[in-house]
Image (cartoon, rainbow, N blue to C red):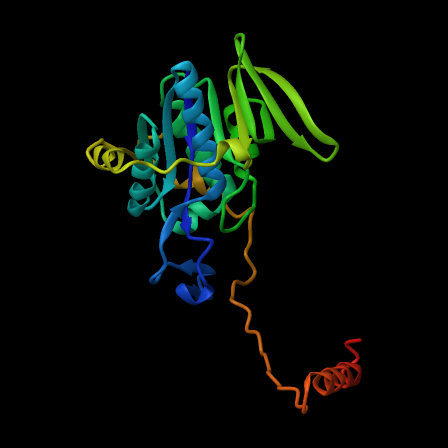
Amino acid sequence: MHIAVCIKQILDPEISPRAFKINREAKLAEQAGASLVIGPFDLNALEVAIQLKEKHGAKVTVLTFGEEKAQDALRRALAMGADEAVLVAGDGAASREPSVTAKVLAAAIRQLEPVDLVLCGRQSGEWDYGQVPGLLAEELGLPLVPFVPRLDVSGDGFRLERESDAGNVVVEAPKGLVVSITNAQDNNPRLPKVRDIMMANRKPIKKLGAADLGLDEASASASAGRLEVLDLFIPEVDSECEFVEGDDGAEKAANLVKKLLERKVI
């Protein structure tokens, strides 16, 4: 069984907005001093793939579409247990467009050994569009099962647990499937050991360009332009602090109530 996992390197979503900068003209978030990580839901997808590998002997190939520095994310994936890694070269602006990302990743997946299962995070951790899994399934001509916290092999196919508004639904599907993975207690990503990190640094990463995928600029641009970012900025929040005076706690509480009534908060 061969599993392809699509990941994305993003700005750490846990950092303070003060740790990075916004290029308002280009409508992009710039790294500055912020750290880069694999998207949280992508890590869940990778963990699911590694668990299937450990249980059923699958091969796991991890792919990303991004800049050269995205190799760090691929090496983290290799340290976690992925077998092979593929970097498809692209700039930050191109990889932000879901339709372009799906077209490029689909072309890269077609160049792999036959793939039985394609796993994606349910959404990226910075823009949270959640469109790539569906668009990727369309590009590959494969069915999509979204919002899956866990799955396992069942006969010649898979048995999946899918989240829905009405509760969890059990789905059985044949091989040749795209699945978007959400987080669950039993797919929390593992922390790689130091030895695994060192070994991952020695593993080769396959690099592909548009020409290698049979894509040209016209082909990529045909999928672009579907998404338009009107503006991007960090909101400025004005705040004031006023101390409530009083000789004791009771008087301070009474004065606080008066101020809240004056401001029509209560």
